[in-house]
Image 1 (tube, helix red, strand yellow):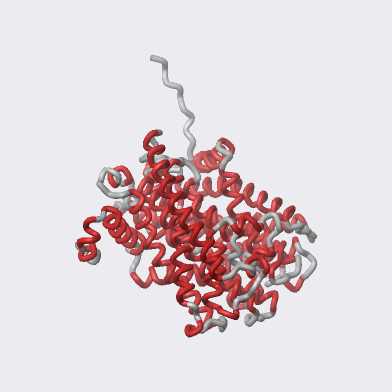
Image 2 (cartoon, rainbow over the protein chains, first blue to last red):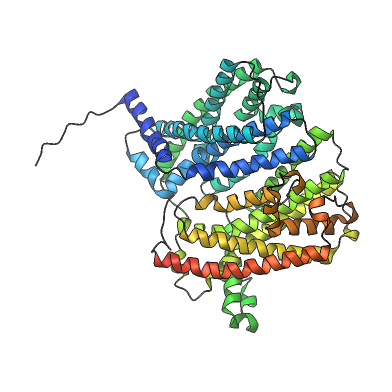
Length: 280
Length: 296
C-alpha cells in the first residue's frame, strides 16, 4: 500500500477563495464542454428581443428605441440568471441532494454562493454579448459611447449589486421551499416592466421608477443607456453619477444582507432540522 | 378526487380508458398547479404576470404615440398579447408534465405501469394550465376594456366564430405541446427550454403583437405554417368586429377561409402528434432513456 499523500489543508481566506473557484468551476468549464447551450440560451431571448423591436417598428418609433430594446434584451440574461441560477439554486441543490454535501464540507456557504455568481456572470455575459452583437447587426443599431471607463464601472457595480441581491434571495427562496419556483416566475415580467427593460424607466413616472430602483438593473440599465446612446440626455431618470452612487450603496447593502440572511437561515435550518429536508 | 368521482362513474366515461385517463390527469394537473399556495396567492400569481406582460407593451406604445390608445393597432397589439397567454400555457402545460413526472416527482415509471392511456394523460395534464390561461386571458382583456377603453362590446362579439376558432386554436396548441412533450421523452438536455423556445418562436412569427407585414418578406411565410397565426386573426376579428385593424397579409382571407385553414392544420397536427407520441415513447423505451433522471 502506498503511503497517503499529505494534503495541504486550506483554511481561512484561502479556503474561502478555493471554495469560490470550486463552485464556479462546473459553471465555467461546463459551459465550454457542452456548447449546445449557446443555441438555446441565445436564440430564445433573441426572438423575444426581436419581437419587441418589431413592435417599435410597427408603431413607427425612432431608431434609438431599437437600441434600447437590444440593450434591455441583453440585460434580461443577467436578471434570468440571478433568478434561476442564483436565487433558486440553493433550493434546487437541496432538492437534488447537493446542499447536504455543501453543508458537511468545510467550505463556507457564502463562498459557494459567490462561486455561483462568478460562474454565472461569465456564462451569462457570453450570452448577453451574443444577443447584443447579433441584434445590433440584424437591426443596424448604432452606438455612441460617451465614456467607456464609466460604462465599465457602471456595469461592474450593477453586477455586484445584482448578484448580491441574488445571494440574498437564495436564502429567502430556500426558506420558501417549492414556492421558490413560482416566485422566480412571478419576478420576470413585473420586473421587466418596472425596471424599464424595453423603454426608458423614466416613462414609468417618478415614484414607480424610484421604487423600481431597488432592483439594481433599473439604474444600471438607465445609466448604461445614457452612456451608450449619448444622443438624448433627457431620456435618463437620474444623472449617471447619482445612479452610480446609488448602485454602490445597493451593492454594499445587498452583500451585507446576503451574509446576514444566510447565517440566520443556516442557524434556523440546523436548529429545526430542516436545512436539508426534501419535500416534493 | 371527490369532485371527479361522479364524472368518472358515468357509464359512457367509465367504458372509455381515454376519457377516464384524461379526466383523472386533468384533476391531477389542477392539484399540482394550484396546491402550492393559498388561493389568494395563487390568484395573484395567475393575474400579475399576464397583466404586467401586456403593460410592457402598453408603456412601449404610449411612449411612442403619446397615448393614442384609440388607434386600431393598439387593440391589435393588446388583444394579440392577451390571447397569446394561452399559447405558452397550453404548449408548456402538456410538455412540462413529462419533465415534472420524470425529473421532479420521479413517477413516470410508476405511471406507465398502470393501464392508463399515455396520450390522453399528457393532454389531460395540460387542462389545468389551460384553465389558468383562460382566466388570465379574460382578466387581461377585462383590464384592457376598463383601463384602456379597448373597443370591445360584449353585444357585438361574434361568439360562434370566437368559440370555434378558440377550440381549434387550443387543440392545435395541445397537439404542438404533445409533440414537444414527446421530444422531451427522448431528450437528456435542454428540455427545460424547449416549450419556451417554441412559444417564443411563435410569438415572433405569428403576428401576435405586430402585424406580419412588419417582418422581412423572407420571414413571413414561416408565420403561415403555424395555426396560431390564423387563430389570433380570427379571434381578433370575432372580438373587435369592424374595429379590427386590417393588414395586407391576412386581410385577403375571408373568415371561412381562415377557419378552414385553421381546421385543416389542427387536424393534421393532432394526427401527427398521435403518431409522433407513439414513436417517441417506443424509441425512449428502446433506448432505455424513458425514465432517466438527468438532474440537468
